[in-house]
Image 1 (tube, rainbow, N blue to C red):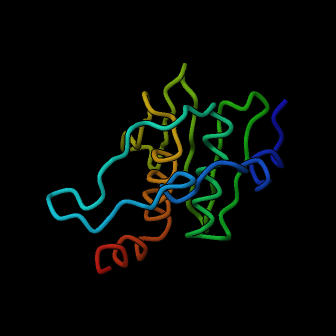
Image 2 (spheres, rainbow, N blue to C red; image 1 turned 135 degrees about the horizontal axis):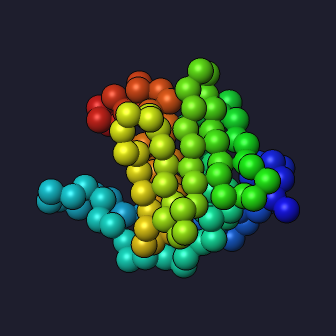
Image 3 (tube, helix red, strand yellow; image 1 turned 135 degrees about the vertical axis):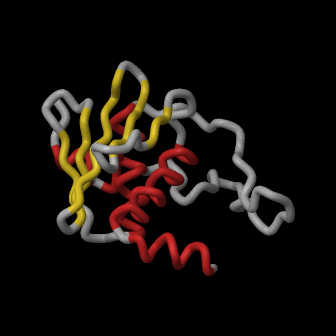
Length: 139
């Protein structure tokens, strides 16, 4: 049975590189071209609960007061910040993030790796706090 402390316990992300770079590698960057940071090849696939733990850890780097909760079956995680709500579900292997009921949100149907989780965490953080998106564009 999955419990809330499973999602928020930082020790559960040991051995998982947070921030895009894998252990022993430098983060990509500084290359010219249309893509400022090349997409690395897929990393090791993570199960839904571990993928959500990585995403939660990375999300809290941007917004430390984000709260995470999960349902009993561990197929849904909800993040809350201020009055906003974002939900992630595991729909038969497709990890779907719903930021707004009127829009489709984000989906990870193939990779399920650290790179995707950290990238989506940045998008969720920008949804919670639009100033983060502006600051990123100015950097």
